[in-house]
Image 1 (cartoon, one colour):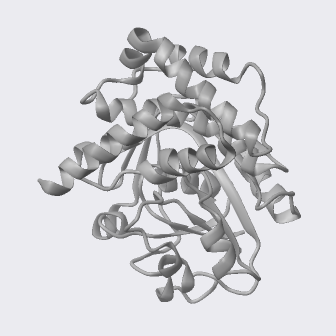
Image 2 (spheres, one colour):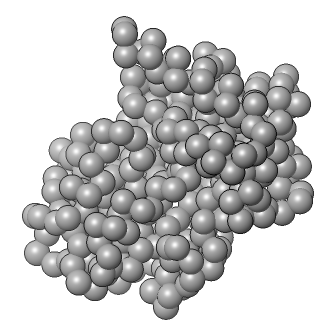
Amino acid sequence: MKVLVIGTGAVGSFYGSLLAKQGAEVSVVARSDYEHVKVHGIEITSETKLGNYHFRPQAVVRNAAELTEKPDYVLLCIKVVEQADRVGLLKDAVGPDTSIVLISNGIDIEDEIARTFPNNELISGLAFICVTRTAPGKIWHQSYGRLALGNYPRGLSEKARALCSAFEQSGINCAASEDIVTARWQKCVWNAPFNPLSVLSAGLSTNDILSTQESFVRNIMEEICLIAKATGHTLPSDIVDKNIDSTYNMPPYKTSMLLDFEAGRPMETEVILGNAVRAGRKAGAPIPHLESVYALMKLRELKLAKE
């Protein structure tokens, strides 16, 4: 199995390293930390049963065009923000038999890639994980790690099953989903409150947010469930309670959106909130809490732009 990971941030480095441990030939496209990863590889520090280990990629390149062979799978592990040229990053990586795997947050993130590469299998993926890149080539895995993978817009191919199996054998749970779009709405139930509220609260952890504003968090989660149902993706009746319980049980965590905000990087406001709000408005779902949080995030982004 030949795999190319585009993005040596926390998610790409972690999941690429797991496939390498199972014998896959894993190469990486590194950008800001190219020099460090080329020389030193990537150190994974995990507080789970996975422990600490070193990941030495098969090849480290600045651009996929530098590779001599096209991979079986290309894992695009970058945040879907306005400035991200996903098509440009993929164009030199994809061969006729390459499966494109998107491991990113958000709602409705697949269409651009599906339209640009109509002849390639598209696997959409979601990571349920607490993991952070603390320095070039340094990844801190705090908790969780479950993946959900499935073909877009639906179904489950043999290659998708094989990738799920490789992740399972590496020591994490990987759910093979025949309805990955519904799974995206399930992930959004957590992302929609905690990512923006961590920014709007000026840096509070998930535990602080939940322990003081549980009712508000629940309202946002329930509105996501309303939108999902209105668009044909009914979620489990206990999904809000399960998300609340699991968040109380996880260590205090800085969300990815908060880390981007603190570093002055673009945030995933549109794919996590904006796309959900637009879907809710189109469906006529009552979503006052979600609309308010989205409006406040757009004001925060405007303030950052002016600064």
